[in-house]
Amino acid sequence: MLVATLVNTLLTGFTLVAASPSPLLFGGSSDLPTYAPGIGNATYDGKSKCTFPAPQKGFNPSKYVGSLDKPAVWYQLASQFQFFEVGCTCVYAKYGLYSNGSVSVENFCLRNGSPGGVNGTATPRPDFGTGSYTVSFGQPAGSCGADRPNYIVSKYYTDSAGKYTAAVVGSDSFDGWFLLSKQRLVPRATIDSYLKDIAAQGYDLSKKYSITTQNATCPSP
Image (cartoon, rainbow, N blue to C red; front, side, top):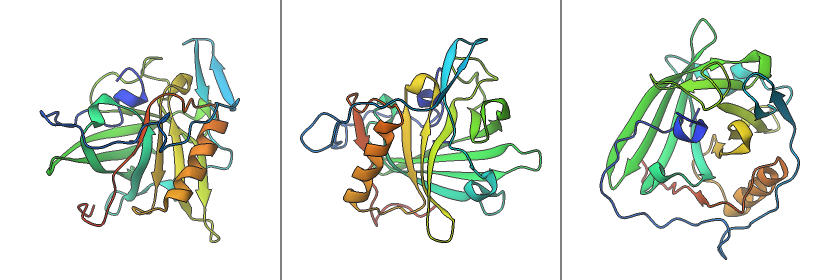
């Protein structure tokens, strides 16, 4: 659950250091597909005057997060470009459930061989559908208000046993997205199929986005 928007809260807190950017592939290049955004399911909130992606129906939080002593690990496969992720590799998040229903959040990034991370809390926002959360790292979260979601599981994928395998997380106004996976190493063809789904949900892949570097040398969570 990867300040003004989700893109400024999920990984805000990583120590920024002087670094040359790692080679990233961007949407609109010959390497990554660019799909026209579709019309995704959304909720308009009159109080904040914001539009929020609708979480996929049937989302089960207990299958998405783990316990505090054994949190669920989600690896970032791709995301809309964020300046604070330049040079970042091996990105993952760990989620554990508190007894009150909120979720512990631990984000990790490796930059130029130096590990960095940030801890926060995700608060459920059931009025916007199960799978909507406000993620905060000790500072005001979200441009639409501190009680409005900035982390919405707009799509999830399951295996034959019903276990979650991947998820698309978006922010208000469809202004940022993250592709997460339970597996660190995923075939490129599979990632491309996820990207097509992301565009179909209303996210604009003509904006810069990157595939996150994940490999066998990344630190284990």
